Length: 425
Ligand code: GDP
Ligand code: IMO
Ligand code: MG
Image (cartoon, rainbow, N blue to C red; front, side):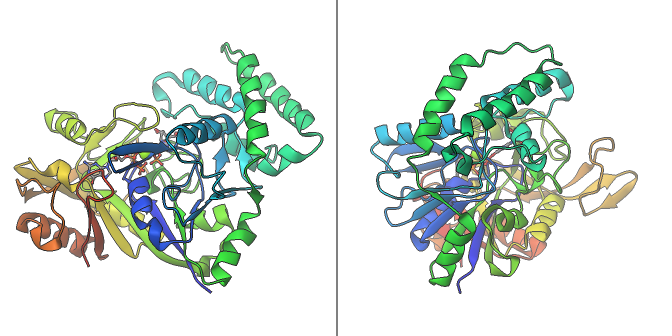
């Protein structure tokens, strides 16, 4: 029996998961998304082309790899249809090629879930989460509240009635908000997309994945968002509504914990966050602006500016512990190419003490980062293709991080393209 490898983000999302899943996909027979929904934006670049995937797993560009949207994912049929239509225009048709299947147990995002998301956020004003407004929170609330609609329900004769019952409940809630909305157009697009959704094979992800494993095939679970956005362990309430950690791969696909294999933890050589909430190492200065401009730190889904700061070791150690990370992947090292000095947050000054862990409350008591200076390598690394071309100072940055984090860094990414990836060991 094979085990499922997992690839997930160790920071606040946008670490470069899409790129690395694409790079690793030739080694895998199946790539499976296990949580989140179209709040994700996973960017892939190769052969001069760029794609952003929201719901579709990042293995679809590999001719031999099957892709599964797992039961833990929430699906907006309109967005999924648009994603597939756009891919088709670019010459890729994973549905016709038989390379995409969806879990029957995955929940559906309704147009009213989006309205609820927007109404909630508007009401919170400056305390808003800064959600992607894709309806993620309300959909997971209906899932755990046992009201949700699932992909498998779309083929039932009374699907329309079930839909109307849920929308009635949503309308009742929305009537308490000062929020204008018009469902008509969205509803027509929703039902058109539901018909399209029915043309994609529906599977029971638990049986589907376990069959791959028992046949000795290789499976990679693709995370969305990042560990610090996990609903249990992230910077609550400024989090998403799913478990973004390794445990989420078990519940989001139907894999037993003892069938988890390697866990690839991916992080940027610095740190970013989009939306509201605490960010101890954030740089609200020229340095932060430089990171944003050089790293093109603008959201793949919403286009919003990403907040930027230095790498945060207490947060990374926490994420490594929660996920059982076995191999690290460092992204966007090239963004630091021009910096004379780079800083690493090694500890926090917190409530009068120096600590090296992530405390419970980082909102009312702000941790102040204790920074260690590291000399920059001042070399363009975007074209390097072999380990022996890595500048010495970047090598020492890597080995310093490995010593601190106690997990080897297996891959180094030096640019957005598939080819700009080095295997370190
Ligand atoms: P994901 O959500 O984790 O898949 O990451 P995103 O796609 O949202 O954000 C990562 C961004 O960084 C994308 O624009 C990628 O094309 C880009 N990217 C990925 N790896 C690298 C890298 O090593 N260097 C640079 N400069 N950009 C990268
Ligand atoms: P990928 O997979 C970065 C953030 C939002 C907001 C919070 C809650 O591309 O890394 P939600 O819409 O989930 O209710 O928003 O989570 N967020 C992300 N930030 N990358 C993502 O996905 C994100 N998905 C959600 O900005 O702060
Ligand atoms: Mg992203």
